[in-house]
Image (cartoon, rainbow, N blue to C red; front, top):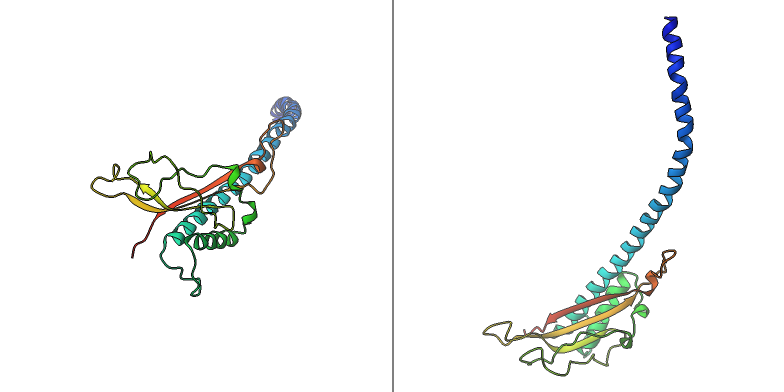
Length: 200
């Protein structure tokens, strides 16, 4: 029995030395890994915010295009409104519901709206694209009466006319990655939707 105790003491000493030596490497590994893990978690959060804003812009564009394409505004209280006014009201409503400010929408001079031909065009080589409606009250581009599909892509048909709503939103948060030029506050997130005109 005594020899087992002496043997266990002899084997226990090297393990203690190994454990004592490993403490320094564990601290060094932790000092390297934790900042990288923290940066990954922060990046997931900020890119998640960007994806949320992008989803809201897509939803706002769709709501605006549907409101502009509908023949009657159900929520206008009997007032005569234009398709662009309907679209602006719908876009503003969706963005307000998601707590996004329409003041962050970028001016039309800082980005290029989609080049869409006027309704009735036979092909996409129409020459001049339809300009954004100047009646917009916020920095969103509403292009009414545009050709969404052409007779060549819809055999036997006349193509589809509709409305396009597009916008660009400046990412509202500043998050820059050290030692790079990447700053999320400089990103313009897009939102665009096209809806065919309802005829009933």
